[in-house]
Image (cartoon, rainbow, N blue to C red):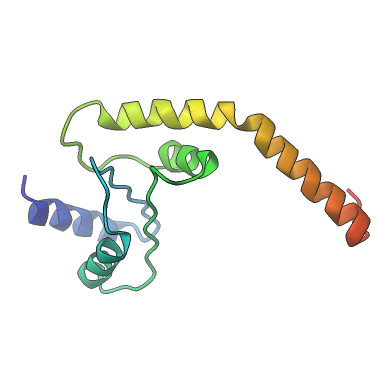
Length: 116
């Protein structure tokens, strides 16, 4: 399947559901701005967020794989491998997320007078 055919398939899917979350997993570095601009031109819509999931936080990665689904895989199993990695990173970072939540809670309680 050519890249133009893949993009046409994507466009067809996006037109059917305005809340589509689409993720592309590239084998190497990508130009996020160029991809964003191309998607905007294809969809005729500027309400587009493009995120490099390889550089995203564990929480965002996990959310993307939990709620998203692949439209196309060049090599079978790539999405499942990414899901596995995203889940492990999410689990491994739980203590850090909990620590951040406690720090924010403490800040709000002492600085802003908010209690919960």
